Length: 200
Image (cartoon, rainbow, N blue to C red; front, top):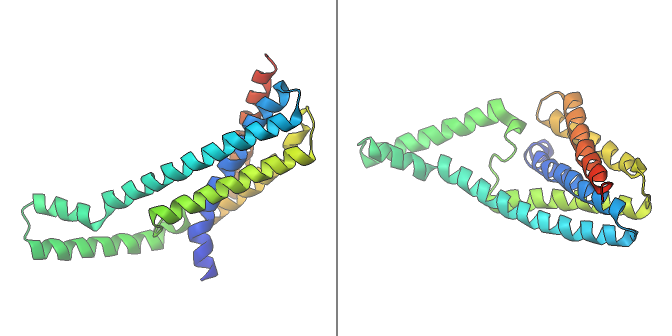
């Protein structure tokens, strides 16, 4: 049961968590450099990050809803109806197809399809919760480490690496590649914003 939960919910949470680290970290990098008041940079990062969390949750909800509607029984029945197949045969074919799809996804995709079986609401809540967790970590790091240089990146980038490693490991992909990909993405976003802020 625990393994099933971790393979279904944790990859979605980690996706939100990674975004919740990268985006607010980039925001904070920019405003921390241009603002004379450290608390102002934290406040702007919090507000911007919170708005992004809401937008991410809404986007995730409708994305998942569209996925379900486009691959569900209703869509299959519409296709079979267009082919002129009788109603009773349509229903049986749709049930068989969905059953085979689920079996294939469970056996071959596993954690690669983290959203499998999640309702739009559950998917949105999990990914949004992950994002907020990442945001809070960035804010806590900024509060504890109130410096103007790039040393404030050490802890968030380290945690990004761990999150990337874990996400790829669960998805049966190369965890080292995942760690490097996520770390580099976060560093580039933060450094780019920090450098741009230096132009002002």
